[in-house]
Structures are given as C-alpha cells and as structure tokens.
Image (cartoon, rainbow, N blue to C red; front, side, top):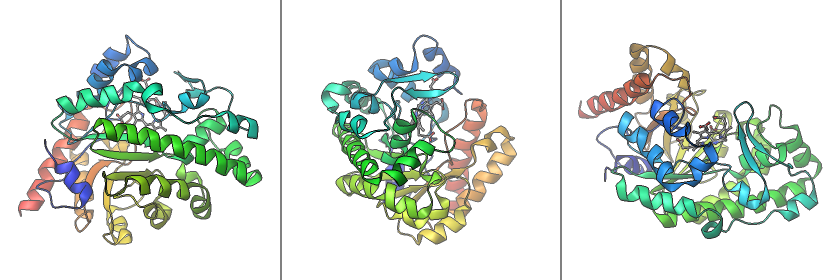
Length: 343
Ligand code: CP3
C-alpha cells in the first residue's frame, strides 16, 4: 500500500505531498451521477457494493493518495432515533428536532453492529481492494447537535444557541449522548480496518472562541483521547482559522484548514506541533490550469517547515467543478512537491 498519506499524518518525511479532496466522491463526477440516477442517496450509503464502488471512483479518476469512505455525517443520527431524509432543495432534513429534555432523553446510543452493519461491510470490502489508505469519518458532536436541534441546515443557529445559552445542562447532556455515539461509530470503522479518521466540524466556526472552548471542545477532547496514538486523527473545524490554537487543543494529529488563512501563517501559528491538511479555495478549480498550478505552488511553499502536509481543498469540492481541473490540481501537487523535495 502507498503509505505517503499516513506518513504525512504522522509527521514523517515523504517523497511528495499527498493529496485527497473532501467530498471527492460526489456529484461533480459523471460516474457518480450514473450510480445515483439508479438509487437514492441514503440507500447508496447503506449498500456496501455501490458505496464501495463510488468510494473507489475518485481514486482511479483523480489519482489521489487516500480514499474516504462513502457515507454521510448524519448516518449515525438515524439510529439514535431521528428520521433522516435528503431533499434536493433543502439538503438534509431531520424530523422532530431535539428541543426539549424529553426529546434528549428519548435518544439512544448507537449499536454499531446492529444499526450500521453496512459501515463495517463497506470498509472491509474497500481495504481488500485499495492500494491507498482509507479514511473513516464522523461529524463532530457540535456539528451533529446543530443538525439535530435545527432539524437541518441553518443560517443563524438560533435554536442551537437558545439551548446552549438557555439550558446549558440540557445541551451538555445532548452533547454527551452524541459523543458516545460518535465514539462507537468511529470505533466500528477502526475495527473494520480504516487507516485514519477525520472528524468534520463544519459548523464550529459559528461559535465565538470562548463558546468553542465551553460547548464544542470538551467532547472533541473526549473522542480524540480514545483514539490518540492508535490511529491518525484529523480534525477539520471549518471556519476555525481565527481560533486555531483552541482547535489544536482538541489533540488531533492533523489540523484541517479552510482557505481563509495563509498556509504560511498557519504553519507559524501551529509551531510544528501538528501536521496540516489543506487549504485551496474550492472555487480556484473554476479558474484555469495556470491559476490552479500557481495557487497549488503557493500553498506547497507555505507548508514548507510544517510538521507534515496533506494537500486538500479548504472545504468540499463543489458539484459544478470540472473534473479535468480537479485532476490538474492533483497532478500539480504531485509534480510541484516532488520537484521541491528533490531540489
Ligand atoms: O468526502 C467524501 O467523498 C465522502 C462522503 C461524504 C459525504 N458527505 C457525501 C455526500 C462526507 C465525508 C460528507 C460529510 C458531510 N455531510 C458534512 C461535513 C463536510 C462539510 O461539507 O462540511 C456535512 C455538513 C454533511 C451533511 C450533508 N450531506 C449536507 C449538508 C448535504 C446536502 C448538500 C450537499 O452537499 O449535497 C449532504 C449530502 C451529501 N453528502 C452528498 C454527498 C455525495 C450529495 C448527495 C447526492 O448525491 O445528492
């Protein structure tokens, strides 16, 4: 197996900078759309043969250095007792949002073997076939709590913050329940054979730094302490650049960055304590190949001196992205980083 990605996670020297793309299996790929035209998204996530097939697509098409399990951060929320749907217009919808003590007390813990057997089955199928590492993942408790309290995506997160500020003990209880499920969900992926774990905290950036410390960080520390030293852990707190030191306090081996911070500044702020993943603006892939190569080069240069660097976009690849430009990005990372390292 090509271990370049895992070496970078561990902060070891690599021959070139490894690259993968958040949401690399998805609607920008015609091959994915063909599979999706036959089956709805949730069924796709729950059917190992086709979930494995779409996981492999970007590895073959783009030549990335890691695969990420095809699933969704909301899959473990359903077995906790909420009905999940994906609507074309609204994105994820969770019925009967959690807004009361009674609703929190009704939630139950995930039983991974019974509730999400397809996760282990898909992982086992993939590790037998892949020549690059497989990343397992989960949503972070705070991000999952926002979906459960709001009932879907949100603009101002008023219901979440109302519970945080108005009923902090209830919010803490909800976070504890989610944390138990996240640990079980990640453990099931690790037991089935994934090589690394990423935790997506897509909405951490709606919190002030003080509230991040109080409401989001403790559960992240709890999760990471369970897996630390046993498997590489990546923590991606989207929009977290203004509180990087706090994000590092969660204890992950790798910090995912969005594009709102200069790579050089991030490397300086992190003082070589952790490896870095990121951070090209996904919209650069709508520019030309010259622009892509130029910006890739800039990020690679900025990351010189980092404890380890895994190239990625600063958020998920967008459905409208031209596939050829994603390929051009991967090629540029490989070419420019191996040239820099042999010079
Ligand atoms: O990265 C990968 O390729 C692995 C698969 C993956 C998906 N979602 C597939 C998906 C991963 C890691 C996720 C994570 C995820 N899901 C996050 C965290 C990352 C982020 O973007 O901040 C979040 C917030 C979700 C919740 C979610 N899932 C939303 C808001 C939506 C609808 C909007 C959208 O982007 O489509 C989804 C649906 C979803 N998840 C799709 C895919 C491929 C599109 C489903 C389709 O085919 O219609």
